[in-house]
Length: 83
Image 1 (cartoon, rainbow, N blue to C red):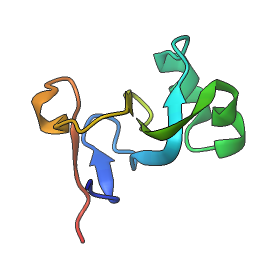
Image 2: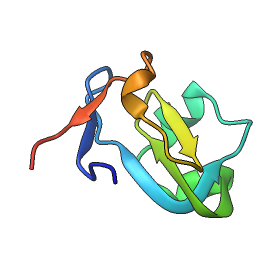
Image 3: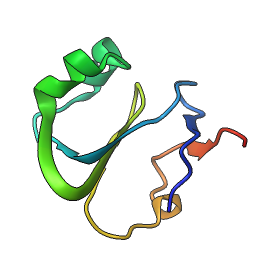
C-alpha cells in the first residue's frame, strides 16, 4: 500500500499515481514540468502494464512494478500530504 496523498517537498506538487501504467523511457524533467497534472498530455508517454503503477510530480517520476520502498530512494522528496 502507498499513501494516496503524497506531496513533493522539492516542487510542492501533489504526486499523481496511475494504476496499470509505467512511464516511457523517453520521459524527462521538462516533460513533467510542462505537462503536470494534465492527464491528457501525460498519456503521450504512458505505457499500459497490468499490475504496475506510475508516479509523478513536477520534478520526479517513478514506474513501479514490484513491491518497492520509496523511502530508500534518496533523490525522491515525497512525503505524506496528511490524512
